[in-house]
Image (cartoon, rainbow, N blue to C red):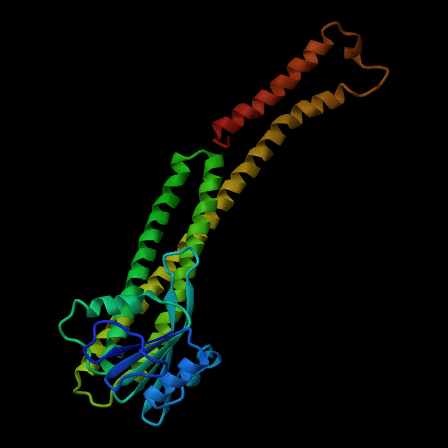
Length: 321
């Protein structure tokens, strides 16, 4: 799909005819484009557009480069961040003079958010550089929202983790730990995708900076880059918190398993003396004084009970049970 934005426009529009992009357009957005749309957009910006395979390259030289006066920049953006398993994919920004082309094969929310923001602003974009700066600002805002949601989720998990031992029974605690591990892993996956996006955006911001340091775009890009640095620091903090919660959860699971093993060990020790008594009186020797004794059977039962109760009381006193 191909859409364009006029200078001062408030919404992306589709050309009336295939290949007909007006000269007043400053931004062409390609979503899952076909070959004809790629050729049309390349003619609009005056430079060849990266293919999908080019966009998926991970080395920096393939993601940020120049062709003549044009800048080709590719960043990894997150989409469907509200789902359990968000997606991510490359988005290319091709800026040449006053014209911008974006190429993407998924639908990150900042694109729609930027268009909605245009309808509420009075300072409308008049060039592709304005649009690029506005898109980057919106992408950073969205990344901040995702990290804030992840931080709130980790805080909730932290509170549940350190109160579950005192408020739940052992069987319930196991279920709680399984749930906490799953939720922590999902948040870790989301934070990891945002981390990859922020690192790619950092390269794009450094490459997108205009040559004239006095331009308003550069001032805005500098602000965006400072925001990006703070997000990278916040992402590092969240990664550390994820690692801590995973270690703590696994530690509690290990502790719960050890408690179960200890319980079985204590039970085995309690029943060991009665087993010894039963083994002694189960021997088939001809001469055993108790064999002909009238009270031999009750005596053996009483002896087994005494030697079982003794260790049990001792373990209770030592708080091993």
